[in-house]
Image (cartoon, rainbow, N blue to C red; front, side, top):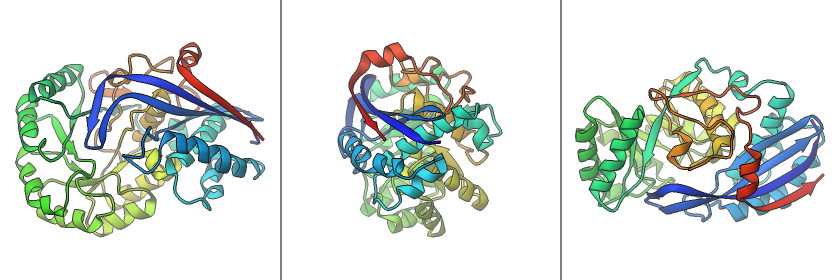
Length: 369
């Protein structure tokens, strides 16, 4: 394909309820979408960077700038392109994996649509449904938390993930485990909120029969995670620490990660995510697909990724209605019997609800080749 035009579109979507983690509280998403036009058709990508550089160093204004001024001109100057070329051409630029992933995503969507196929077929996933978990934020009161969890249990989710932080961990976990019973999957996510001095405290979570403890320590503290993994019975899962195939392989070898959370935006795109999956599958390390509060664009692509054989744990591919009153795609992800149907539409697996997208667009910028 030959690139012709890039449209950068900013949209504003209110969340159904505030979503609080150890990084802060979100009430709405300012989202950057990319629409790439080629000589063989067009495709959409979604940048998962947030408004502020809190979860990661990337943020949405910076992503728009680096894509417009650096990444797009480099891709456009390279002549014919396919999705597999994007990472290689942008490799000379340091960092910005979420921005790189968004461009690769848009090119991949255009490529698959031009071939009348979809991401599920391209990856060769062997399932048409995948189990769905839900991520539950931090609340002001335990009663609010329990009411929210009960609602998700009633919705049929296969697994509950609780966000935790110092002062909001043992008691919330105990009460939720009592609420959902011993058989439903339960895990926790600390988003780097603890330190090495908390290892003994974190080991107290062992009594609640958790699937895993996700990213309790800072992302650079691989040694600390290895020490925690040696001390705790609960498997340790890395998230923010995993930014590439190499970091995933090293964390496994060092004993810091017994489970890997794969987020395509965080590792630079769906093709790198596939490579991490393949490596983990070869080494017998379970993986699951994390979420970044994506719209139906990223949610559809995540479902296709999670259909691969190594994704043995429920991912954070919740129903669109978990976060948004209305999605920007015509057939949003829904949950039935704890499962998500892997989308079969062309490209990444979605069609845009153009009228609604236009109504929530706050900015449009066009860059030509």
